[in-house]
Each structure stands twice: as structure tokens, then as C-alpha cells.
Length: 85
Image 1 (cartoon, one colour):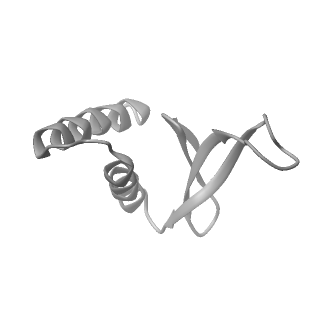
Image 2: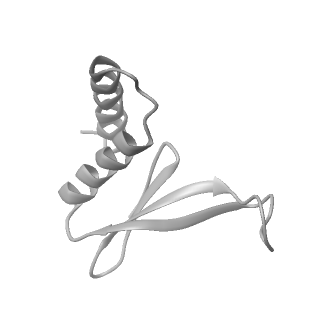
Image 3: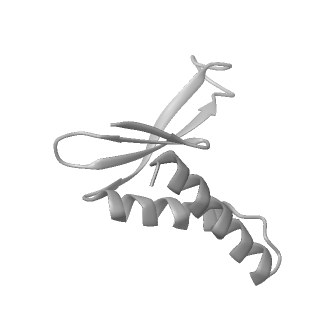
């Protein structure tokens, strides 16, 4: 499994669903290169999706509950499209 959702990637191994973040390294040996770093693990795809939404909430710059709700709805749509549900 290798599903890209925005700047995140969902992959799996025999034991976990792995949520990784894609970004361009700013320092170190890989400065300027695209990097994928695991940020969370989940036992099921359902929990992985919930974790992705929670990550999105924590990264949000929303200043009102309405803005946050709109961002969550938009992200749910993005996730749904990534899985072609």
C-alpha cells in the first residue's frame, strides 16, 4: 500500500499502517531533497485515517470553530478521494 494524501503518505508493513510526512529537508546531508518520515503508526486503516484528521487539526491555523470545521470537511473529502470511496 502506498497512498498519497496531500503532504502525507500511508504505507503498510505486515503489522502496521504507517503515516509519513513528505517534506523538503532544510538541513543536514539531505538538504534540498524530498524526504518521507514516519510520524504515526496505526493497527487499522480506520485508525490511520482518524490519526490523519487529528494531525490536520493540530496543524491548522484556523481561528474559529467554523474555519476548523470547514478544514476538517475539506480534508475528509481529500481522504475519501485518495481512497476512491
